[in-house]
Amino acid sequence: MKERKYIVDTTLRDGEQSPSISFSRKQKLEIFRILEGTGVEQIEIGVPASDSYVRETLRQIVGIRKTAKISVWSRLNPGDIQHCIDCGPDMIHISVPVSYGHIYSKLQKNKAWVLNQLYACIGLLQTVDVEISVGFEDASRADMTFLLTVTRTLTDFGIHRIRLADTVGIMTPSVARRALKDFILHTGEKSSLGCHMHNDLGMALANTIEMLKEGCDYADTTVLGIGERAGNCDFYGLIRATAPLFDFGISTITAMEAQKEISAVMSKQIPI
Image (cartoon, rainbow, N blue to C red; front, side, top):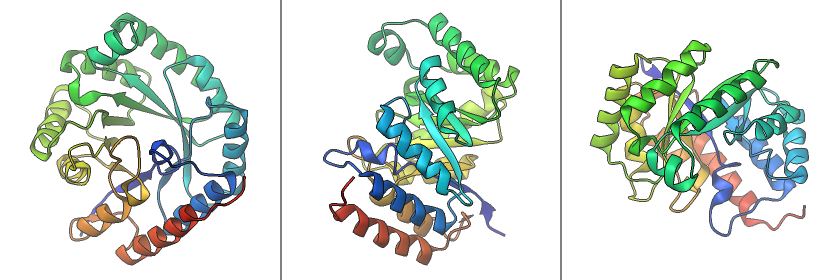
């Protein structure tokens, strides 16, 4: 039997960060409908903290959901978390900066700030009935000691859904495989791990496959591989390439047809 794995499609979140790509509300609703129809396990639909128009769009998507688990993305900020809660998703994904480059240089903060913000965000989420996922932002350049500290903090709160992100797209397949193996060895986390690969070196698909083979259960994808800078792991490409290895609950033909439909939606200038 093929090993069961799961797609987390982020076309409606990271995909929209592609240069020159911006979806209207009608496009987002249609893209969501098509993705859900394929049997995708989880669909990341956007960033509620962006503005009120985005939040209303996300609430409409939540309202038409039938089977897919809906997640929204949040910075490590209690105010952003509250905007997520107000949209009524199934899951809130918190992006936690873990590399020193992001913490000290980009944010001008320190490790204590990261942990304090994490406590505040988790504390707020414990007041509502919603699943929590945590993404390790820039995990590919992070220090393992700090990764271990953050992971222990999460497990103390009963949070085991962790996503490792190659935020700046520097990994190669051998590096990705070794990084995940080391993470599991040091943290003891073996369940509910996910990966979010960027395609700056053209290796998002290959890196994702290696992470899945090494122990990840969830793989982030976008239709046509769209996304920030050079893009992300391609939805159809991953399902096609791993058909002999993994069962995503989505056939290659279904994925191909969905990609064609979504490509047609993206090419139309649909009014807001």
